[in-house]
Length: 308
Image (cartoon, rainbow, N blue to C red; front, side):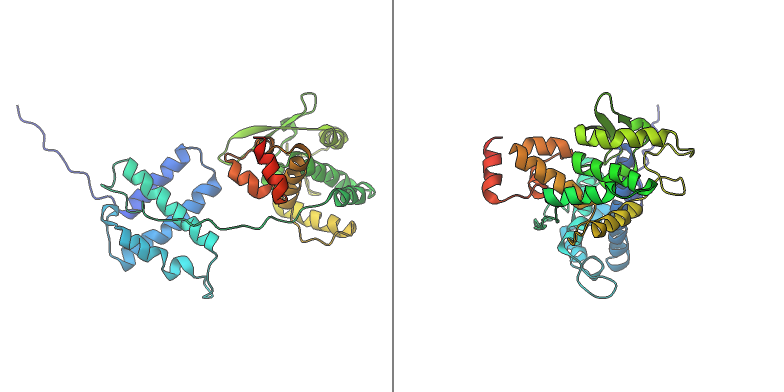
């Protein structure tokens, strides 16, 4: 009995390998933003190894080739010639390492040429936060202003200060995501998953009247927070409104909406001294991330970590 000849697998080109990796990322439930970020970085690599190094197969990529790519102007320079930040370069390194880790683990390449890439930790200064006095001034400036926008923004700022959710998570909230009797909201987190966040008494008091009025608003969207045009508010709209309220409250700090998440984390750590609780409330996978967010004087931080 004759056996059919075995057809060898065609060479795996960089483009085909990136397409397969994209499918893997989507199958893992990675967010569209994360997938797009990987594809941008790997697109740079694809052009470099094909145009500059004339390497038609990913199995032919060597550690020296990757080193040459990582120090190239495509990776290290901006379009105007200025140097890119180390964080930006690290992001490309992370994409390349993840890509080749998967290729090696899947048997697409005989060895991992990215195993020697080192990503140096970059210190990121903690963002500005609001003091307790400033928080009260901000909320008072909003509550003392009449109108639908102020009514909505009081609920928004209160939710930020009392839950620590991200602005992307806030604008993604729908009416049905709020459960006041059970004192929780359901948010959509990174990776396309959902998570629960607790609503304390301050958040509930701000949300209850707003939610009652929102249910009566005759708009098609189920978004919790809507614009004057009846559409879901955007991240940019939330930031712009926040800047206006800071000015109205006479707060001159250079703080973004994300700084309210940091304010929440710092306040919670100061009151509990428990980094694990702060980690859980922010939804961080690693407590090292929480120590960056919850930036407190070193003695307080040491004392908090002693209790873990």
